[in-house]
Image (spheres, rainbow, N blue to C red):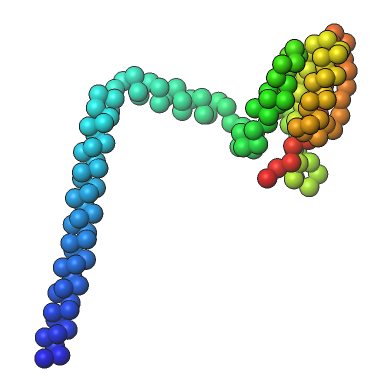
Length: 150
């Protein structure tokens, strides 16, 4: 009697686990068919292959520290300087790490009239800590901005 109950329990458990696996396989096949239908003509498109190859080549050429994208540095600068007629130049390769690695110094070049540069510096101070500022000839100002990582 005990062996019969154990056998029935084993068979029931096996059926339940098999039915769950069968249901998951059926759902997977259904999702695969839907995906193929939604991709339609794009699945084997040469145009899509060309775009993929182009993006892969761009990724190889432009290798930048991910912090440059995560800290929203340029969008914050753009929002701070909205409405001020200055030209902003940024070169990501001139970014340097702080001594203990918790801060990155980024260099901007502002071009414009002196008054516009001063008002731009005031707006930038509201967004970021300005580490250093140097005025150059020709209406240019080199600004070193400190960005805290994290």
